[in-house]
Length: 358
Image 1 (cartoon, rainbow, N blue to C red):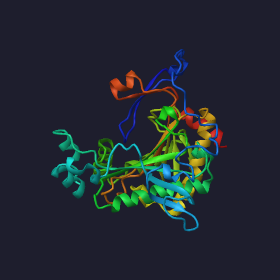
Image 2: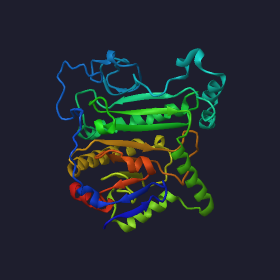
Image 3: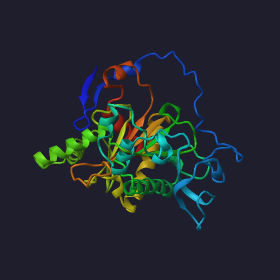
Image 4: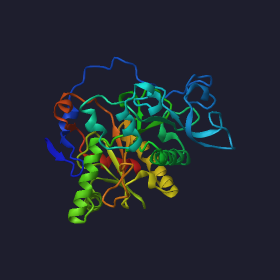
């Protein structure tokens, strides 16, 4: 194969699969030191995410604790705290700077927020959380126990539910993880982030509406159709469990990109059960360990795409978890076109994953 043009049938991502790109000589070296992800901090570390350093963080909004321990004290297993350096801020922190229009939008959850922002700047309202994934020194989610990863996933779910119940009527809940410097991490301690936003990101709004319109027209779920097709083809299937299918997407944007899909139609990640959390934890641990094998422990982003918070359950839509290895930068082609170049065909990536998992 010299080069192939592929377009994702649902997300419309445009990708050039070009294996020859992996043969390019690379002479430039990174000028900044990477975050150490292999050494352990000392016991007296000022790592704010260590158990016992709760005074170094913002207050927790949610935690899974043992022994009836009090908030903002030791005794926690997973902890959700406000981001000290947030991209968005709660409404009350804007004080007199906020306009009546902004306050109305944040209160009633209007979906016109983005349209109004074309006319004049609006307050960057929202919630920005950090989920500390373990109380001890650890840099890799893959090195946590299955039970611990299950607690992390259940806290993601429960915090999403809290966003849905919040009086400000947030429109979208985002879950993401930046692992390593190339993926945007600033601290090595294993953690993820969550955001509640007063608008639905345009990409997700387009995708959700496309699934809904297609279902109303053909009475067929695009995601269910894709899941069925991938299982028939088998070439891009990495693993299947009783609840989930893992594929290397047809139009993978990044080398060794992965997509985890629930086999049953489930639009909201907040709808997953405790049994789902347990199975997803086991699967995620295996996949991240396999990624470290096939791609030499790369930095990566993990993102969960879920239905807008105010939408009812829709059988045409499936939430999904994506793992996006960051083995190279976003360069001029990507910025100039909005498309991607991937040097590793997903069929090759899937085969290597299957071998690593066997």
